[in-house]
Every structure is written in structure tokens, then in C-alpha cells.
Length: 168
Image (cartoon, one colour):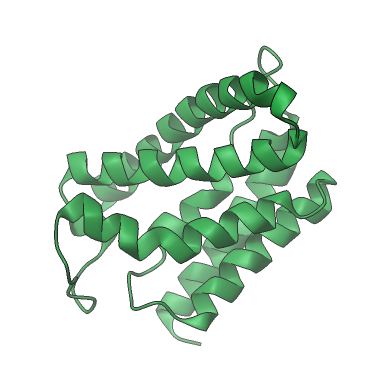
């Protein structure tokens, strides 16, 4: 097993444990429950879309669903943002093509990372809460929970980026 695979495996295990043990038990003001496990999708190497990454994203969401008793909504949301990750990155960078061999999320300018994280986090959280409530009458609750939870999750993700980039 090479170093990248080992680091990815440790990141997956760490994020799953952190999400299940700590973050799933946070329910601040009844609306805020951060989903930091999506951090893996941002740190995963940017390559052309491949089945391994999509499977990993689905597996990550499914594990969170199993321990959260949420019936597949995290798996669906995580798989969707994994699928649209490259097109969103292209639109944020303003490029038609990305040099997949050198592009890493840590090498991007901080404002571009921030926009990229905001877009994917809001999409993920909207899908999770839309599938959780699944009625038009609850659209206001869906938007409130999406907004508040996304803000808290984005703060945690950006702190993680700052800590990792400071280490290197």
C-alpha cells in the first residue's frame, strides 16, 4: 500500500469516527449539526472522474448513514457532490481544462478554495435536508437548516485547510 492510499484510509477512518462519535451528537439550537466528513471529498486528489472516487464517496456516505440511521440520504448527497466536483472546480477556476497531474486543492488560491467549498457544501447540505424532510411545506426549514449547518461546516473545513497548509 503506497503512502497516498494509507493517508486516504487514515483520513476516512478519522473523519468517520469524528462524525459518528462527536459531530452527530452536536445539535446546536436544533438546526446546526456539522457534516465534516465531506472534507474527504475536498482533500481527495483531483484527477479525472474515476469509479474508485465515486465508490469511495458513496461508501463514505453509506457508513455515515448506517451509524446515523438516516436511510441513504448522506450517501446520495455525497455521491452527487463527488460527481459534480470537477465541473464546479472548473467553473470556480474559470478554466475549461484542469491539469490533473499538478492540481491539488492545497495549491489553489485561498479565495478559490473558499468559493469551491461553499458551493459544494451548500449543495450537499441542501440535498441532505431536502431528502430528510421531502415535502414542499418544509421548504423553509430545509433552507434554514441548510444555511446554518453549511456555515458551521464551512468554518470547520476552512480551519482544517488552514491547519493542514500551515503544517506543510
